[in-house]
Image 1 (cartoon, rainbow, N blue to C red):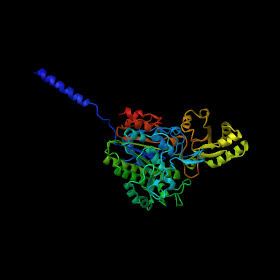
Image 2: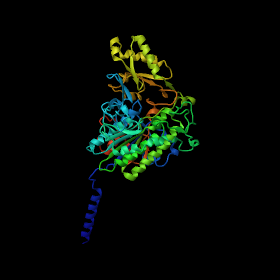
Image 3: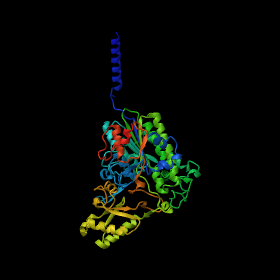
Amino acid sequence: MKKLTLLFVLISLSISAQKKTKPATTLAKPKLVLGIMVDQMRYDYLYRYYDKYTEGGFKRLMNEGFNCKNNHYHYASTITGPGHAAVYSGSVPAVNGIIGNEWYDPLANRTVYVAEDTTVRAVGSGEAGIEGKRSPVNMHTTTITDQLKIASEFRSKVIGIAVKDRGGILPAGHSADAAYWFDAKSGNWITSTYYMNDLPQWVKDFNAQKMPDKLMAQKWETLLPIEQYTESEADNQEYENVLSGEKLPVFPHTIANYGALLTSPYGNTITKEITLATLQNEKMGQGKETDFLCVSFSTPDYVGHATGTHSIEIEDTYLRLDRDIGEILNKLDATVGKGNYLVFLTADHGVTDIAGFLKKHKIPAGTIELGKEVSYLNGEMAAKFGEGKWIKAQDNYQLYLDHELMAKKNVTMNQVYELVREKMLILGSSVYQIVNLHDISSSNIPPYYKPLIENIYNPKRSGDIMLLFEPSWYSGSKKGTTHGTMWQSDRHVPLVWYGWKIPQGETVTQTYISDIAATLAALLNVLEPNGCVGSPIKDIFSKK
């Protein structure tokens, strides 16, 4: 009897163990992925204002999530369009075709805008005109959002949102359900016929609230007492731009029009509000498939260009954005459930400190009037090779040459390159090197930087010669600042993961923007985008 009892116990334990180790019958997946991109967020902004952030926004992501502290762009043209495309395609401009916000098209003999599509029209505003003729058709690769749609037989819902059209369109991919952007003429959120022929009723109702008008009626005051902004310079620096309709770059600011609204934290406010409305009305994360919401906060770019990296304006913008992000996370907790959604936060590029600010502190820096330099070079080419407009266009620090004129005059690419190099290198401290984009491998630049140039060269869209300026030198005016170079200030951006299957921790191992799409593909068990060059971030998986 004792033996039978013992046998029964052993059998019961065996059955129990089998039940516990029985594999899941379905793959686990998040209900929602939220991609947050901050336009012009340099890595150090996570820490410079850290003590003033709330516990629910940036700090929540950093302290409860996984922080990739050594995250960089893997190419040289660090600007908005390429940044959004690279994050979601995991590719490079050389492959996905998004080499700039604009580029010169020699066949059409004109500049092409990154998200332009002349075959579609605006939906949501009769006044939008060309601003509504937008779609992702200029992007040659798929995105992680496309791959999610394909993997789910297009049952997953994908929506992109940003006040900048390219910030909403490129992340959402080719097969998105919708992308919405802000029309500064009408004050409405609009889309194009690429996605739909009429706005959903909830978007019409949202526009009817006239939120931008209500925000414009307010002055932009600092969130905290102005004397507490010790991470920034004093207000009213001579190298800050004056905002639209004002005489001095000082608080409080008056919002003169819809365009000026975007150069204030209120641009983030309206982005946050339509994000919350999208989550609610589209029931994002409420279905059987994983949904994907792509949100880009564009306002920091407008404010940063105008007032720079050490202004009270940019600090106040980030303190308010911190609260906006916290509000979105709280909404997801309440609707999708904490632990059921996956978040990543990154930026489309960094930003260079204002040259005037750096020079004030004895740091080498300066600005170049690139238009004047191009005119000078055209004159030198005409003197040596014969009359004509040798440089047809310049964009993204690249020169587009007149190939027909070169053939007619029997002038080779190498001859033009050598002349440009000779004339530009004598400019002294501003020019670092000149690169023949048809022969990058022979360029006399350090091996570390050479792949950054190679990764932007697209044979159908790139120029012929690229001008590389010294660190902290850029093309622009003496007020405000910009980005778009291969130097660290423009390439080092945040990358923070949070939520579903994300461990708590951080890494200083080198990661790249292209790794984001690859990591998402591994987490979601879908194929990576077809032009992806990144790799899954191992530390995220090894720390589970």
